[in-house]
Image 1 (cartoon, one colour):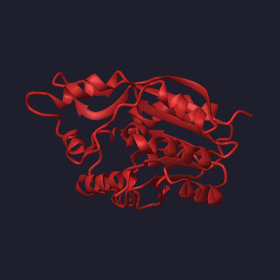
Image 2: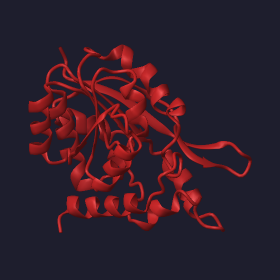
Image 3: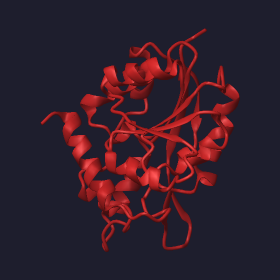
Image 4: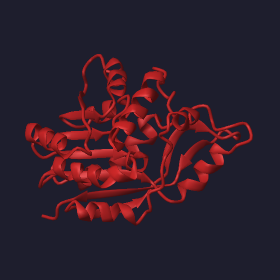
Length: 241
């Protein structure tokens, strides 16, 4: 079994068991505290906002549906059939389109690019959940989707998130209920060095055009009632024009 096959099987198991209700998954926070925050940083910097937008690693499509209200063509893409089943059930009106895609397989990314043309990409918290052997391939796939005019907005956990997650995982009463299934299915977030992400992008022929820091909101709350947020960094990348 390949690295990608193990990764796909883990996600299929996770999404088959995931509840339908909004906010039941650890990272499935309301768009008001996720994509809406990100939109303020990436929408003004897009070279062409009219390009199709691919929500890469869309999961159950919560952020996809929000983005579909703001862009003319939005495609939620994921490598998990079960995740896309969730997304389609939650989107009976068909606000967005959904596509089975393993972006780490360059042929698949190039096929989608051939269908859409250049596209913008929104990706939140996917790279750090990939197996190390798939990370460069994933970024290469993103570059293929962008073409010449597309822009990618990537949000990834920073190195500072690791001790926060470690503390949650090692609580005396166990990890928070919504985090426990992530560990159980073997998709616990891995460590990606902050400096590695720009290197992956450069190797794929992309340039970091803007970057910053912004907490990644979750659906869990601390004992004092405050929302658990994980330190993260955002990057806007594309080809220099």
